[in-house]
Length: 56
Image 1 (cartoon, rainbow, N blue to C red):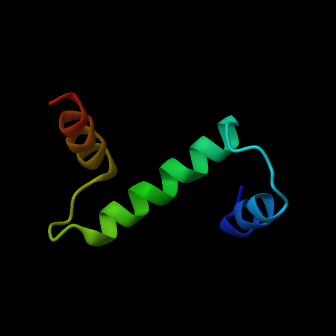
Image 2 (cartoon, rainbow, N blue to C red):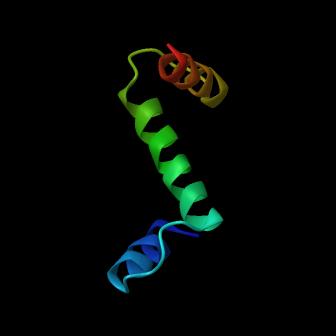
């Protein structure tokens, strides 16, 4: 699913609890995190960091 597909799905009041929606939201979240970190972290490092934050 592309970002445009996602936006069209949202505009059409599509379901948000599908695997495709979860996947693109996760990808967009990781992309935002990579762009907002001051260090060049890998996707795996960001996932580990997020998991550690959640489990604290």
